[in-house]
Image (tube, rainbow, N blue to C red; front, side, top):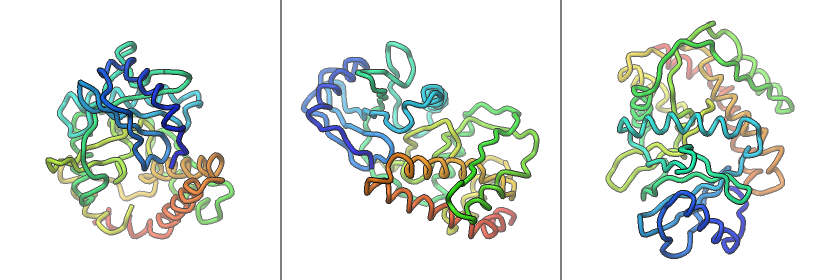
Amino acid sequence: MVERVSIGVMSNLIERVADRFVLGRPVGAPVAVNGGLSNEMWRLATDQGEFALKHMVANAGEPEFVGNIEAAFGIEQRAWSAGVPMTEPVPDPVTGGALAFVDDSFFRVHRWVDGEVGVGPAAEAVALLARIHAVGLVRWSTLAKVGWRAEGWGADLVELAQRVSGGSPDRVLVVDSHCDLDRKNTIRSLDGRLLAVDWVSREPTDVEGFGAAVNEYTRRTGIAVPAKPWIFAGWVAAYGGWLDYNAKHRAGTASGAAEVAETSARLRRLAAEMNVLLGQMAR
């Protein structure tokens, strides 16, 4: 998890963020929300409702950071307008974008939704993904090379990175997507709906239920997912990048070390079980 700034320091800052986003008059102090892996989350009640305020930490200094977030925000806003089940994004009223820069930090806001994280079968999450894709912009494109080199992570992960990096067609149909719709980025709301949260614009399994999930996606969209290793390239690049980030910036913390261990284990499981997954896709 992210190592937090003290609540005393953050309270005044959160008030300024609330002013920037015109969220209303705060009712009580902001409450820190535990569980964030790469950013800080705060829950704030105002006379206009409750809001989730996210202090952006991971990669916030990278040149492509703002562009990535704002690209994702455009997709997110279109999905919200089309009725996709998700938390309501709140734009910065000054720029109309996702991010506001307050006291040398980036923040973004959504309306708060009570619920439970990551509850439900994989097929239900795939049905949610299909709804997102149904309202996304579709176009032919050259497949982006999102390779991860796996340097220093062992022969098995180097082989995995190489295996998923080749064999893709020159052009593919691409569609706007959430790009990181895993369990931690879904909420089961109190009214029973599965909601998408934490949208990102860069492409980021478990074997049990994988084939059923792919079949459900094909049933809902009419799109057959090719049973080829390159299908996993975005997933490998995303988790590989997350592994590198934690090893470089957070390995000295307990939460960072835990992320290194868990992420490397996920990648190694994919390396060991890819043939099984591809076999399920080919059925």
